[in-house]
Structure formats: structure tokens, C-alpha cells
Length: 116
Length: 116
Image (cartoon, rainbow over all chains, first blue to last red; front, top):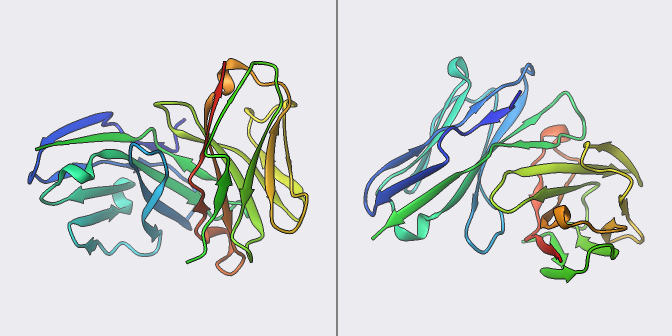
């Protein structure tokens, strides 16, 4: 079973549109972290945000916002007024506390294409 | 800001050859990881390493793979006899001790390995 599911394989939007990337996770742990990473065409993983399982407050950082809902096991990511530079693959990841060596479980990624 | 570095950034090798991918984790970190990303797919956990030994490995990490921390700074992944399917981006990550199991892992920029 997938620990992290990103059902949207690819999304295309026109610049300035808002876009939401979905992430659904599965864990039996009560303590865990969720992450979003951006992977531009150059290939590196750029850390965007980390949320712990005890903090369901939504977060906004500039044009980025995150909606964490434990009731639906979702951690969705919204880009407001998208720009061409937002084009990348975005990965959601889960890290569980029960394992001290906390490997990351990554979703399969959502490729975002922002067209001018 | 401290960062994880990886060398080389790209490597091309012939099938059956041995390759060593090198990583320099953040200096005070104690937990080290290798992940793999086959082109167009998700990032997958390979192995975690702590206290000079493997703490966990995935089913991908078979006898062809080994890891080592030969000195106080480097962390290496060796593939003894490369196969075509080993072609992927390999990411090294490290984390410190302070935050416990949920401390953020910091990823290196990756080594893109191509096996011909």
C-alpha cells in the first residue's frame, strides 16, 4: 500500500492561475512529519515545508499555502498566482516517528506546467 | 548555511563496472541516507546508516550495493557491478540528532548515474 499518494500526475495551468496539488498519506503513527519538495528540471530536491502531526494550522508563505487536515489524511499545497518559474515536479513526503531512522516515503510526484 | 554535497554530479559508466558515489553530509549530522530516483519516477529509500553501520535497507539495496563512511566526512555508495536499471539520480541525505527521529533530512543535489 502506498504511504503517500499524489493522484495528480500532471497539471497544466496558465500563468496567474491558482493551482492546488493534492497529497494523501497513510500512517498508523500519531507522531509524524509531512514535507513538500520541489524538483526543478535541474533535478535537485528543494525543501519547501515541514509540518508535524500535532500542528494542523494552515500555513501561508508568500504565494504558497498548505492545508493540513488529519481528518482526511491530506496535506494539500496551493500556489496562488502561479508563475512560469513554478514549473517543476512537486513531491509530498511522510516521515514517521516510530522508526528512529525515519526514512522518507515519497509520493510519485505531480508535474506542474505553468504556461505563459 | 551548511549543505550536503555530492560528487560527481553526473557519471556515465559501462554495464558491469563499479561506481562509487560520494557524499559529504552536514558536519555535525549523525544519520545518513541514500535514495534513488529512476527517471520520471518517485524518490525511493535505499539505505540508512548510523554509528558506522546500516540501520535499515530497502529491498532495492541488494548485495551489489554497499555503503561506507571511510573517514569523518565522506559517506559513499558503491555499486559493484552496475546494471542498466541502476541508471537513476542518487540522492544523499543527512540529519542531526537534536530533533530526534523527526528531525529534517537535508538532501544533496544528487548524482545522475547513467549505465550504458
